[in-house]
Image 1 (cartoon, helix red, strand yellow):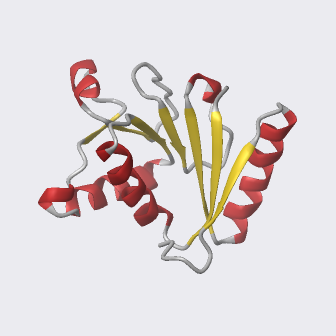
Image 2 (image 1 turned 180 degrees about the horizontal axis):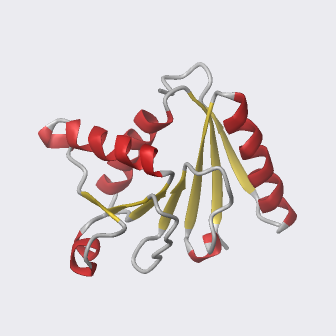
Length: 145
């Protein structure tokens, strides 16, 4: 069964996601990040801005198949859900990811604004209605940016 975790209270969801990706890739994970196009562009820019020792190889979902195979992080801004080879899904989109159950783990990043929290409540209800247990990580009061 897919493991689900919500990370609530990220004051800067993009910066938090980049740190999460750095740790995940260092542990050997392959991660698909699902977001809108503007957020994907910000993640791409911030991943390139990491120090050379912290670089996280990544590409866009529209890249060639050979590029996607070599990239531990895939940025899926257009809603495509290529699952093969990616065990972790990080969701920054407002809706429930299609085919989320094909991933070993889904991490929902939730910001502090009301719209983001309201959308997260809907996703939480959807997952619990399907019988998925959810881990909750409250970032409030921590360096959650």
